Image (cartoon, rainbow, N blue to C red; front, side):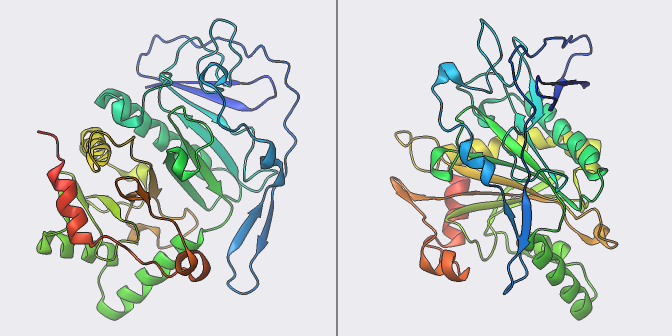
Length: 347
């Protein structure tokens, strides 16, 4: 992998990741941009203690532009873009409308391909591996910044999820705090250790392997299953068989096999509801150990992939119980979801 670091016209960092060592990235951003002025504020919910980022400048962010005005397409033929190169493989750049800014964390955009119409599932295994390498590199770089506690790599796919740019991309958030969901996992991990003397993540994976009914995919280095108490109609958790705390700790064998496994899962998601259904909206979320955690080696790196579509033409909305009380109600039995995900496996 070759990494080329440059800057955009307003001073934001842009990084090219190339599979070729001879790739030359010398395009200059021609736009007359002024430096971005944005400052987030982090407040805490007095009743729960949860942090909330206030980022009012994001109201002006680009929303569903036409294809010929896409800011993530290459900057060719006079097209003004966030990416000045005429073509690219994988690109990461600082978000122009960040949720976390002003010294309170950092937000980056990850472009998986320069093809405006392609999705992650359309990538080759080599392209998907390059994305994994980019995620890993950014995790290393961002975790070294002052006051960063957690690095979160994720993809939102589909307008139903709330995506504002249709071009295939993800994001990386470097949080100056441990996110509430991770903090709850951390607490459960400690409780389980105190009660049993064992690791919670290890026990979850062992139980799924022993039960077998919710397993959807197994390889030498990865295991994917629908969780026992899935929140979402179709939800898959992907774990490396060897527990590691973060992307940096994955060995080469697991990294090599990841692309095949992940692409298969994404392609199955697109076949869940039949050939006439539009592409399945989903969120794919990497859970990594906080870098400030003294016991971070106990944490189990995993990816959670889920969709808000519960049936053909029907979405799972977060209604009163979920949005108001955080009490999830799932319309699809996890064992039935797992069976369906196995049914649509590639042949």
